[in-house]
Image 1 (cartoon, rainbow, N blue to C red):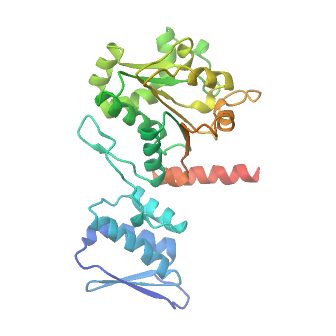
Image 2 (cartoon, one colour; image 1 turned 180 degrees about the vertical axis):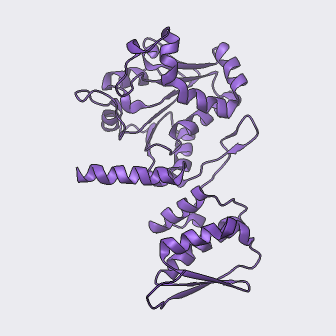
Image 3 (cartoon, rainbow, N blue to C red; image 1 turned 60 degrees about the horizontal axis):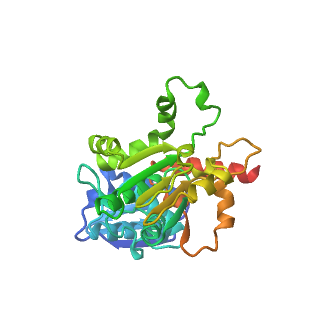
Length: 322
């Protein structure tokens, strides 16, 4: 890579005992991406990586964090490299954070589920320690998936007798009355993301069997009215689409020996313009209740494709301009 300017900064890193294919990726893609991002030139010489350019120190800092992650036995993928970079930009060292923490649970195929970001770790800790937790943040931060995984873990450990997953049946431009089929067929599309998370963690057959036994319920929010739920792990998903009245109704369903997790993204509200979001209002009402914790996940906690972060950032910039 050539630059038409004088290079006046250089950094050197030792590559001894490091698998370069793991560090640099296929065809040195990780290295090429770093060169493009920081406008540096890299040279591999013996057991050293030489980095030259005005931002050589910044690039070296990222690679050093990647090396430390490999030495801890972690795998480097696009998400993790992007996260290391995002943290570094905020002056935070990935290596000095206890990001992963304990395993939440194992999926049906034996894969361990751990938090992938600092925000996710704090979210998991809050669910373990508080009776009601609000997970608020953009798409892709694992709000619902982590809540379902924690619910499954509590169920397997006999901490609760059932799992109840609820969602408001609100979507942009649609209403239940215009959808074909009976009531169950009408509401199922709204509940599909919850089913997907359950199937991934428990396996489809196990999840359906537990649903038949009513150990797991996946229901529209309206079905919660009038119930008191003891010994349950209760999740309300897409809570930004609740009204203040619905939010109050849901929270007062909580019974003895139960835990409640509410998830939502206040940037994606599908309620009519004249209706307030219960998720926005509840943050003001319950902010001083000690047993309740609000966890705010951010763009940096997005664990989907890296392009999702760019989409979220672009929308945030656009909204600020408006």
